[in-house]
Every structure is written in C-alpha cells, then in structure tokens.
Amino acid sequence: MQDYAEPVADQSAHSVEAPADVAVAMGIKSTGHLSYQEARQSPCLSCTTSPCCTYLLLLDFALESLLDVDYAAYLLNFEGIVLGLGPDAKVDVYLNQPCGYLDVPTGLCTVHRTPTQPSICSHYNDHSCGYRRRMTVDVDPVRPLMDRQRMAWYARQLTFDETRRVIAVPAWGDVQEAFLSMHLERHPAPTPPPDPVTEEWRALTLSKKSANAKPPGTHRIADPVVSDPCQGCGAWCCKTLLFSRDRPSEVSQLDFFRYCVGFPGVEVGVADDGWALIVRTTCRHLEDNRCSVFGLDERPLKCSYYDALKCKYRVHLGTPRPEEIVRVSAGQFAVLAEAVAFDETGRIVELPSVKMLRELLEDAERARADALA
Image (cartoon, rainbow, N blue to C red; front, top):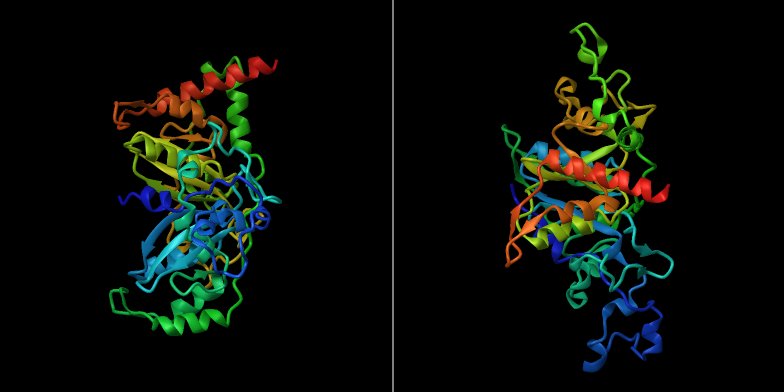
C-alpha cells in the first residue's frame, strides 16, 4: 500500500505567532513587492484564512478506471470532502474542517509552541506553502479543486475502453475554462456529535461488570440481524469514510497520525495488520438512516455493489468492543504514543497489539474517571 504520510507532511497545519493584521504593524507591504528582509517574514502573518489548518489531505489516487471515477464521485457526497485535480488525472482528497486547535476568528493555533502541537506543524516551512495558493481561489491553474458539479462535468468528458479503463481525458485548458464557469461550493464538515458507540464503550469500561460481560446470543439465518443487516442498522457506512494506511514505522509517521486526530471528525483505527484514518462525516443522500437515491442512477456503483452481508462498518464502528480494531481519538492518542517503542534513530521497533492497546485505553479511562470523582 502506498504511504501517503510524506506528501501530507509537506502540507501540514501551519503554526502562527500573530494575527494576520500584524503584517501591517510590521510594515510588510501589500503591493506584492517585498524587500529581501520583508520576504523573510512569515507568510502566515498576512494569511487570513488559515487553509493549512482547515484542509486535511487524506489520500491521493489516479483516475485510471471507471471505478476510480465512481469512487471520486462517491467521496464528494460526504460533508466537507473536496478533491484537487491535476493535469495527470490524479486527485487529492481533502477534508474541509477547521483543526480542533485552531481559533477560527483569529486564525491562531491555540497549542502553538506547546508539547501538544504536532511536530509536522511546528516544523512546517510556510515559505513553501501550497495551501494558500491552491485552496483560497476558485480555480488554481495547477491543481484546481472539484466539488460535485465539477466532478460530474469532468466525468462526462472522459473516454473509456471496453474494460472500463480511462483512455482519454479532456484538454487541461478546457478543464480550467469549464471550472471557471462553475462556482466552487465550499461547505466545511461540521463537528460530529458525540458518538453513541463511544459512549457505550465508556459505560462498559467504567462498569464493574464489564470484564465479565455476558456474551451476545446466537442467531439463525432467518433472523434479519443476519440475513438483512441493513435493517435497523445505524448506517455506519453512510456516516464514515475509511482510509487504510500502513502501520507507522518511524516517529514522524506516528506524529502524522497525531496531527490528523487534531481534526474533530478524525480518529485512528488501529488493527494488528494495518492502521486507518476514520473520518466521521455523513453522506448527503442519507435520510432516516436509509439511502434516498437507492435504485437511482445517481447512486454510486460503490454503494450499489456493496454486499451488506460482508459489512465491516457495523462490526468495527457499530459495536463498542470490536475484536479486530481499536478506535483512538485525539484525547486518547497520548496513551497510544506512550505504548510505542523506538530505537535511537526514531525507528519504531514495537507497536502495541489491539488487545494491549484496548486494555491501556480502558485503564486510562478508569483512571480519568477516578480523578474526576
């Protein structure tokens, strides 16, 4: 699996030391012509939108087949998701949501120069920042953003062979011209509400009976919970996006995960065979926990072909103690980080197992509750 940590590390959240209007106080010109000494001043001082703290790069992939194109369209159905498109038909997937440590009115990082600030942020070179150039304009000439309208136009211009591979893409000049005629919709993902499954996990953890909980009952094939798992389901597949990643192998990659969970809708899913970014955001077509475009052409192929009998969303996200995965939020990340062992060069030599991590998190939750009692 491709490791996307490095591209993201080049475009992490920025660390700011003063509001944007400080640039005026420091005498930095607004004409676009700077002296050498003025050019050395942090570009963050004149940045008013903090795009590096409001766009989290989750993934990049190439549009090489019909299913790739369908996946891109599928992602854009979720709140706060936007795509960046390159001339090579590669797309970046961003979550548009303010970092939990960003003070939005001032654009300041509330954990700047504290141990809580990820290294990826504190060492970010704002002089090479691409966020301000790409994310604050409607059409960047190098890598413009795509919403659902632009993606639909782009998909209609593609040509496929009989195996559904993309064999021709529109000319880049035509793409830019078309995008300029379409207003870009920007709707940041809201902070997700408290997760009832997490609350159930917390209640079980603090219960004296949790260690000896009664195992669930058995069911037969005729039982809808087995044969029709969507019935009565919490629609976890429509409220969550999952992005698989390799397990971290060095301290900088672990720091990248710490950076990601700073965004309110993001958790880390830790399994023994791999990690994942879990993004809590809702599909626009979800109504009363059912798909409102079921059976219609608008429904993505990814959803139409999804086999509910094999669903892992319900197992991993809909139960408080799944066997195969542990969910780690920003408030729990320090427990995970403390359980990782490194050599003297920062290479990871041991990661906690799912069983070990679950026990550590539950011990920490009990200790926290005792401290508040």
